[in-house]
Length: 344
Ligand code: TXA
Ligand code: MG
Image 1 (cartoon, protein in one colour):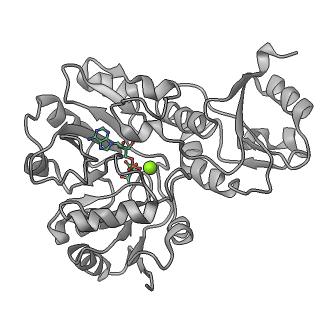
Image 2 (cartoon, rainbow, N blue to C red; image 1 turned 120 degrees about the horizontal axis):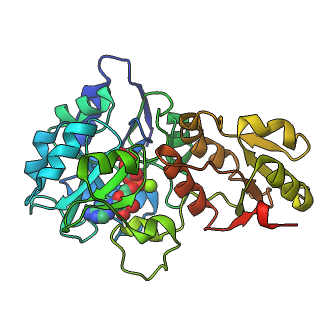
């Protein structure tokens, strides 16, 4: 199949894309977080194509993208006030809510769960595509399963050229890491995945938040977890990644001691001069964490090369979106972290 590349600026793009969605085709859509691989979320056959194109495990549920909070009720029941409070505070934006699913939502979309994840993305053309297609759009990150997520239309083309009907090119994604996911189906709200909305912002609205253990520690692949996606190997380039924590100087000493030809260093822009002889790649400025979240996946994709032996990575500290960057890098590194301060 020939994959159409549609510009988000072209006036006819939303109606062409919506038409393809209605016909049960796959269309990659831009969002403020990452590009999604979209299909009619209420159509089992269309949803099955997503799992096939990504090579995604069947028990890993999809997020339904809607164009406003009023659509929550069409898809969910037993909606607590906290859902409306979070939607009012952060939608459209990088926040996904998990709620009890109505029967209209196919179990193929929810990976067999009786809950469903919903989010209203902060991207005008994508909301217009959802509105025109008249259905919620199921969309996982558009990468091949297990690989770093897609933050440009070129990334999507690389992974799916010839396999999907169209890609809507909205330029590079502003946030760059996937949405924050909060489960509101239990007594206490639970953070399942950190993202563009930081835990502090959620707490300010909710007054309470449990952080799921899948956020901070590796999960056994057979474990029963709240967000099935969290247990799979994720975001990982072909070669092993090790995070080197600690001060700039101690980390540089450690990396220089252990670097061998064929390795790469993934660092902050401010650190590039320290690694001039270690094939460094910067993913953004430590002083501006938004550049790190926006640049992380493009850098991990560039490092996804079987010729590379090992990557030494520098990771930001702190809350807000830095918390999400830490989470993604730790997963890419399979939680392999060396504290340079503790090494001699
Ligand atoms: O920013 C995002 O959320 C992007 C863009 C495209 O919107 N989408 C995205 O989708 O990251 P995906 O499929 O790559 O990640 C969805 C995560 C998975 O970890 C999945 O397990 C979890 O959401 N999830 C989906 N439905 C769920 C549910 N009912 N209960 C718990 N977790 C759920
Ligand atoms: Mg994903």
